[in-house]
Image (cartoon, rainbow, N blue to C red; front, side, top):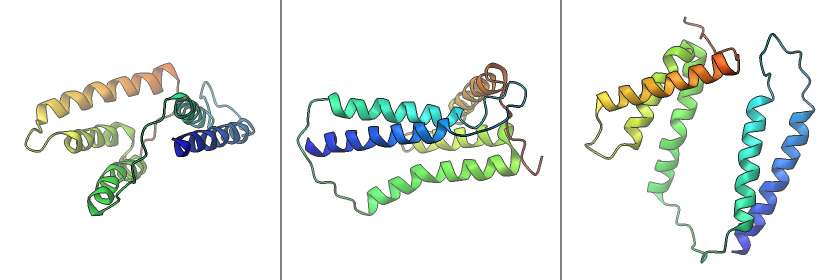
Amino acid sequence: MARDRFLGVLLLAISVALYVVTSRIDYTPMTDDPGPTLFPYFGIALLGICSIGMLLRPGAPELEPAWGRTQWLRLGKGFLPVVAYGLLLWLIGFDLATPLILVAMYWQMSKPGQFRILGAAVYAAVTFGLLYVFFHNALGSYLPEGILS
């Protein structure tokens, strides 16, 4: 319980510090582009909300984490799509990279033997459509085109 509260205070302090640093970013807006501060503000808000939640929730019994081979593999499998998405955005752009990564993440999250390509395609198409409308139309953001496009 004491660790959760300490971590909550620490994360809240980090989110405040990140807010201060992000608010000092100077940029010249192009058209209606929200600029480089939009994503950090989303992350800061999420971090702040989670840290306040850690401070306010009742304590649970402390369990010692057992980080074995399985946990490290799971962590790597979760981090791999993030790195792959960054590389694919750079190479082939948002329009091709996003559906590919969404299908890969759907495959990762499905139960063994339960992956269905039709379900993955529908999930990827709907999620891609919503992301495109949100970033391109609602926010007016520039979406990466990729160097191979």
